[in-house]
Image (cartoon, rainbow, N blue to C red; front, side, top):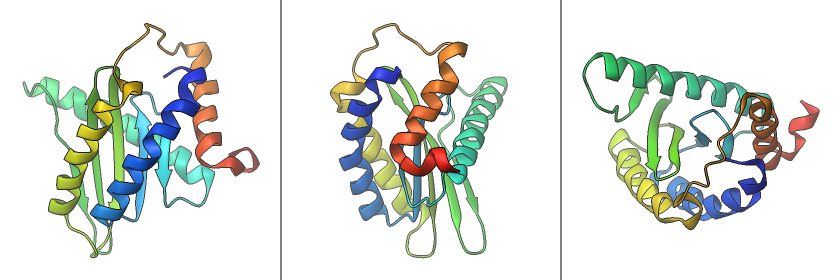
Length: 163
C-alpha cells in the first residue's frame, strides 16, 4: 500500500471495522497489510502495542503461509488461541491487491464461531471496496517500507510519535 493511498484506504476501512467490532463483540482489532503496515485498529491505547502486534502478526502470517505450503495446503484459513481470559484470532483477508491480516482479541462476551462468522462478512465487505480492487504496480520497497509502516501507525494512533 502506497503512502499516498493511506488516508483514503484507512477512511474506507473505518465503517467495516466498526461493524465487525460491534457485531462480533471483540475487544481489540488490528488490520494490517501483509508487510505489517497498520491500516486500522480498535481498542489499543499505546502505539508501541500496535507496533508490536503488527510486527508479530506479519511474522505469524508469513510463518503460517510457509508451514501451509510445506504441508501441501494451498492456503491457511486462520490461527486461534484460547487463553483463560482472552482468545486470539488471526486470519488473512485476500483481496485483489494483496493479503491483509486481521488480529482480533476477544473474551467471554464473544466466541470463536461468532468471530469467524463476522470475519467472513468483513472480508467480503473489504474485497468489494474500490480501494482494494486494482493494483497500480507500486509495491513498497525496502526504502519506503519503514516510512509507510510509521505513517500507518501515526494515522491510527496520532500520539505514536510520542511513544
